[in-house]
Image (cartoon, rainbow, N blue to C red; front, side):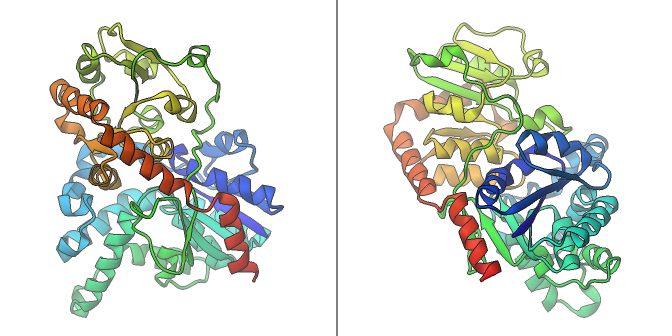
Amino acid sequence: MRVLITSFAMDAHLNGSIPLAWALRTAGHEVRVASQPAATASITRAGLTAVPVGDDHRLDMTVRHAGPGMFATHADPDFLENRPERLSLDFMRVSDTILTSMFYGQLNNDSMVDDLVEYARFWRPDLVVWEHFTFAGAVAARASGAASARILSFPDTFMSVREEFVRRNALAPEQEREDMLAEWLTWTLARHGCDFDEEIVTGQYAIDQLSPSVSLTSGDHRIPMRYVPYNGPSPAVVPGWLYKEPERPRVCLTLGETIRKTEFPNAVEVGDVFEAVSDLDVELVALLSDDERDLVSGVPDNVRVEEYVPLHVLLPSCSAIVHHGGSGTWATAAVYGVPQIAMGWVWDAIYRARRLEELGAGLHIQSFTLTPELLREKLGRLLAEPSFAENSGRLRAEMEAAPTPNDAVAALEQRIMG
């Protein structure tokens, strides 16, 4: 097969498709990875062939000027905790309008869509795999006659809301129906001589890397795939100090790579974390950039600050992790059975953190409510109560039971090639 993989230019979203790309290559398939020029180095450093398309998106500019207020509409607990049946139709219309204009449309700018369609019509892929906010991939699949598959690295809360919105919107009087995502995709597809239907949003298949107890995706179109940690193009090197077993419980702190590289607001105060652990019998390994390190006046004796250590190298030695709530960090900790304190504050991060707590594999702290006292209390529980490690082990076993990327390739071959 010829497989075109695409994601908008943000490593945290691109990284989730890299293990599948490797598996496709080792199975003998031709693979190209298309993104905006800013992602070219990340693609090639992963050992893959890049196709730069369009101009770089300007999401950072939008976030910088709009500020945290652009996320305010989605602070509704029913949205964050995936209860779309409790959301009003008006809320869902506003959400759809904001996401389409300030998020989807920014990520999938016209130049990216047009270049991707042009390349797909030239290269004629059998399958287009697209990161599930990268609707340009769905358009390119339709325009080139390829099969279309979304790849999911985090729970599909957006699709849950979308399905409820489409159902209820159809029941409204015709003059009151509004669907900005459908309108935008209709215009975009028409530019390339194609029509819109809901399959453009859902894809024909959904390659799902979430464990069944966390996933929100179901149905025959779901292709399960084990999450394989890939920490991005940063140098993956094992530091010498990791050769020895820690003398006391080791705890990892990370605020994620996305915060370092984008304008997305960070609600976690590093100083609060340092204060919380300063008198605990732990070794905190804090993965901080120079800018993040400059936010604190001092480093406690039981804290080791490192700019970068791959999580798949560090976490097997850890008894717990405290993190910002990012999907890659969450899933990597789950793969290694490490109890988590997840400090999500927006979108699917809240659902993941709450679900983790329900499974008994970690605890959630709303980022804006973090205090040293609260973190100290929750981290103490996480380390002292054996049930957290036991339940994290169960979550790990569930993730390990999922089909490997190689198995997912075989499933795609069967569905597409027959």
